[in-house]
Length: 183
Image (cartoon, rainbow, N blue to C red; front, side):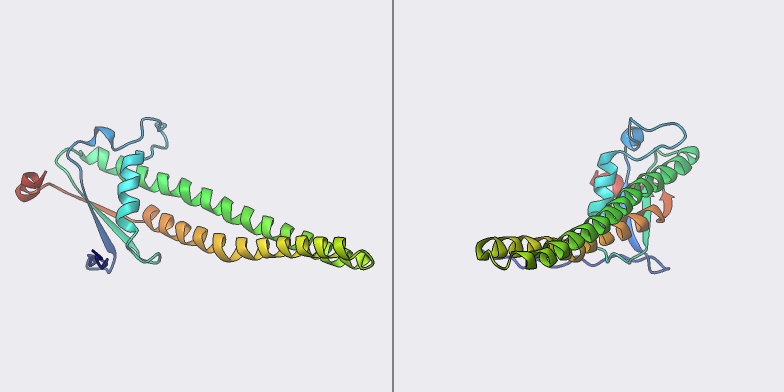
């Protein structure tokens, strides 16, 4: 019972941006209840929807979020757009910090591994300790390479996605009657 997974076609707007369609029937939970008045952010549920919707996009794709709702007032439109931008700006800053920490940690591991291997030459008369310390040095170096090659690329992809969501073009439209029948 094998099913082949196929990628759904990605809708693009006239400017080539990947489109996320978000229908909001009730906007009372759009913003996080823990937002401050000067820097509101979206709720975790809205964020999960946007991230899930954008997960099929290439990390370099620009994004256009089309929000269909009869609930969102003109004043709320600006607030909601800022809340989306604020949420992903904060996430991008967090990922940027993780990138810096990963690079710093990798450099430290590389230096420690190199020092251990260099100092290991003093233990040549003790074969057991020589091998043990040699292995430990190479483990440090391997961990440094792993951190840079695997974790760093994962963080870079996340950062690109968050920046694209932060800079997304956001438009609003009313829900048409066909959309209302689906909900």
